[in-house]
Image (cartoon, rainbow, N blue to C red; front, side, top):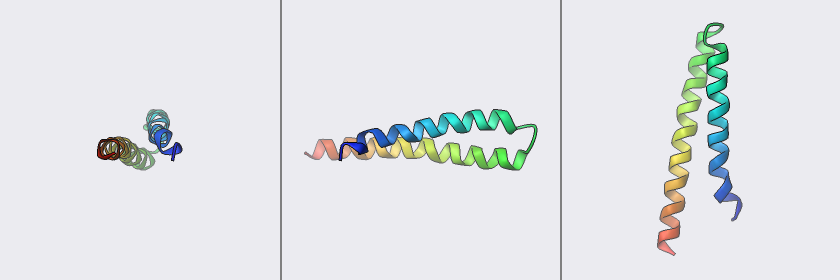
Length: 61
């Protein structure tokens, strides 16, 4: 279960890549940029969700 501590940081890495992707393709293809923005918001949400879930499980132990 040690991988669960590091998996939340994969969401942040993915979010950083999506920020780069949005800036790169904003003027080229707006629809793809909007999709990347949606995935960026989802990745950030998942990071905070996983962090909260990990804190809850640590407090219950």
